[in-house]
Amino acid sequence: MDPGAGEVPSTASEAAPSSSSTEIPAPADQPGPVPSSPQPSRYESQKRRDWKTFLQYLRNHKPPLSLQRCSGAHVIEFLKYLDQFGKTKVHAPTCAHYGLPSPPAPCPCPLRQAWGSLDALIGRLRAAYEESGGSPESNPFAARAVRIYLREVREAQAKARGIPYEKKKRKRPLIPKINTGASSSAAAEAAGPAMTRGEGSSPPVSSAVGEESRV
Ligand SMILES: [Zn+2]
Image 1 (spheres, rainbow, N blue to C red):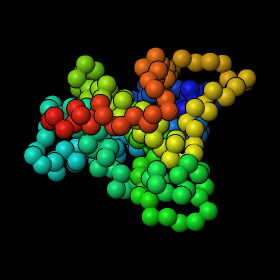
Image 2: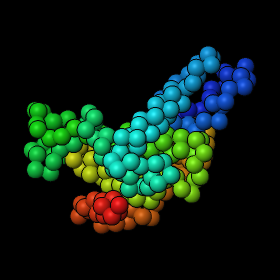
Image 3: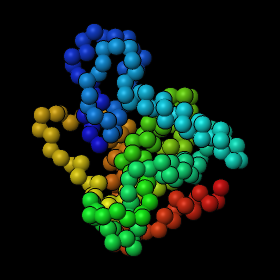
Image 4: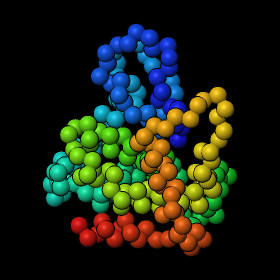
């Protein structure tokens, strides 16, 4: 999570009237050079792909689900559905490799979507939803249940994989601090006072799952 990622380098002097100039910086993207061609940026095309995937998911949903009726619980359902395509080994607490970042041997633990991928995905879908006319108030990707779910995934994977996700406070002396509204406030919120829940007692996926099963 790099606040400066996605900034347009000052070499883009041509002032091309591109409609994608107001894009939100991608949280997890590399600060790669912006191509001078009219091609959409990597973030933009990824966002469009993700949005299509989600709409496809809604079309195939049983019972059928419209975007208007989509809630945070459905978004969580979607994230869980994506886990089957994950490539990140997440050890079960009973596995001998639980808590090891690079296990010395194979094990039968499942592959999942890494928390960072899900977090970035939700950011893109949240933006795509509003760009396609949805109101921020009804944005299911911004739902509290989704934030809670992501936080629980992060905590669980940090323990299972032995990887702390809190190392983003690195000093960046050359880059002035830029407050990119959406991503930084979301990050601040995620690390906010709501985190003061009991640390050691790995909390069950209670809140998010509870809401899901109600629907
Ligand atoms: Zn394992």
